[in-house]
Length: 522
Ligand code: SF4
Image (cartoon, rainbow, N blue to C red):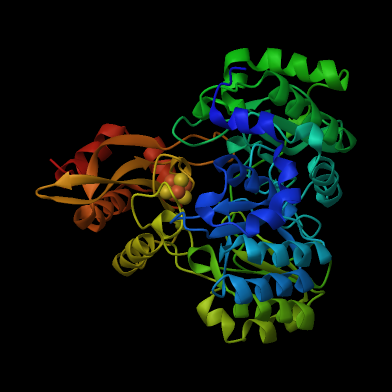
């Protein structure tokens, strides 16, 4: 039998979900003795081989819409302390990762997750991934409706569902009713956004978005989707992807390529053929983009309660600090926290009169409530700390750059988002950044050094657009000077309240190319 790629062969030989039966045996083996197909199938258990490939893995835990209780957070902290060098990472899909575990560790970790209602099942692999959502769902004063029950329904339907455990690639779903595009709709395979029809609250949907080396903004489907129809549409889209998606070259297997080839009318017809006729029309209520940031103390929709959003530098939190946040959530609130897709944390349900006492805790000096306009809005991927693809270190490099810009431009007054991604897989979403950097290595003079390509002015929300590329590679030792020149020019041109991406949108890219040219490697 011919297969389009080796992953298809592995999936045909044994379904990814079968890996749970093999886990105990695999844990007894040296890494080099494990069949590569099984290393791949481990992703269905949320277990991913990390760099260097020496028998250490990360375990990814799904948190639909970023919801986590204090009791669950404490268990995550305990597991990270015992097995993960005391550190936890929040991902750009609101999931949580513990690195440096072995398969023997996983035998203890997975049941302990399950015991508190957490799951790593299908957190990785060619499956529907964790459902991204509004981290404020249920407490959001601006949300059109509470999406928690809908997220839960879709999450439970797909979780470990053998009907959908062999997709051509991953399927990323976003469900949010927040008007500031908290679900980053148009970079998902399928996204539900808030909409109204004749005064009724529901959703519009976008399909076929994604980043990586060939980014696509998702295209709008023509339907108005009542809350009770969200699962039907998600199921129909997943079925279309499973049955008609490409299964040859791995980089071409994502849903975005199928949607682009079929055209949105055909995709809509194929979805409706499964769901039955759906209403048309209505009005989307998205009115901006908040960059997925929720810093500071803000009123909830519940009178007298506030939520407290804080910044986790580099998306990392020490296990003991996560346990402390859980403690605070229990002491001051109702034992509830949320993760965000900007890799940060929110404590919810705090009585307003207790907010001052809560935020006086020493921990907020290390995890600030009002981070700087560079450091609080910068994003990096994992980089060569753990990622097998990474040619460069990213997290500390970006932190150094952001701190330098914060020193240089203390009066910027608005967020300026610099994203640094380690390679063309674009995990840090450079296409959405004000200044997007993609790392690599190249010979400059006699040395091989880190170099960066740039793109400028990306944003989501209404009129979403990817960042525009400028030519050339910037050597590491020129990066600060180059970024400084770009920001200074933005400050020279901006009118009151104008963000970096708005200035880029109204100026010719050649202006910015000319600024970058002196810093390029020759
Ligand atoms: Fe790894 Fe590349 Fe993704 Fe960074 S962008 S985490 S280097 S695959």
